Amino acid sequence: METMFTPFASFGGGLLIGLGAVLLMLGLGRILGATGIMSGLVFADSRDEFSWRAAMVVGMILAPGLIFLVTGAMPELSVPVSPWMIVIGGVIVGFGASLGSGCTSGHGVCGLSRLSVRSIVAVPTFMFTAAITVYLIRHVFGA
Amino acid sequence: MKLIFALFTGLVFGVGIAISGMMNPAKVFNFFDIAGTWDPSLAFVMGGAVILTLIGYRLVWRRNAPLFESRFQIPISSAIDARLVAGSAIFGIGWGIAGFCPGAAIPALGTGRWEVVLFLAAVTAGFYARRLVASSQPTTKAA
Image (cartoon, rainbow over all chains, first blue to last red; front, side, top):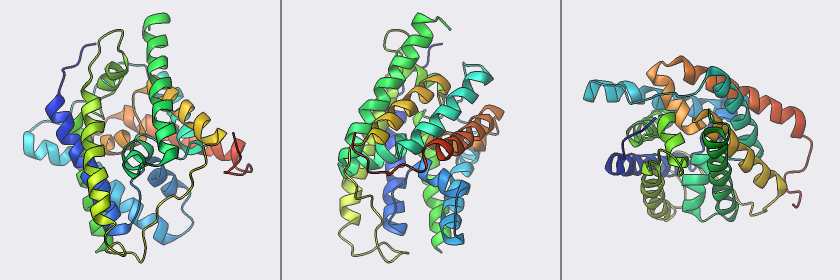
């Protein structure tokens, strides 16, 4: 399934993602990592740990609605894989991202920007395994 | 005030994710599918996000403390251990199977699509699985 090359929208979206990360550092002094925010909500051991993460998640969830109000259309989202792939992939994502202490936002955006050695190892590692996985699924197993 | 700030931060991040194309699994698969229907857009997302965060973090860190907390909480570990590498590699595999990562899926909840709910439920199951198998090992074990 082809998708359109969107360098300007993607770069602009990237700037906003970065702005979100910078604002969280400015306001709360925290790294914006989606895995940490989500697992912090699931395993929160204090009200203070829970509440700012919950507020952030509410803000994130409001975003597609805001885009709908402004542009009249929801952001594009097409899922070309089966529900089983979503479940299996999701469990693997949750397991791996929590074991590796981060995902695309925490290691990718914030970690690289901090020039963290751990993130400089993590990001090429997950980009490589994701690319190999997509190659195997699409071109070897032919799904 | 802190929570309103956190909510706004989440909204900025979420709008960025939506505009960038990150919440569209079809686009994620095509980013990795260099041998097939390649769409390099998502490289621009990472580029935009890292450029802004790299500069923004340094401006923010000129302050002694964030706005709503007494100190910055930044990870200090630089240990390249087996958990980091294995976790990141596993995360990439899951990302390549499902096409969602946590930072894209949380804002995508706002589109109301059931696939996103399914994915995040699976990610949560993955968090619990990680706790079951790997909670007792030290985090700084050398690779």
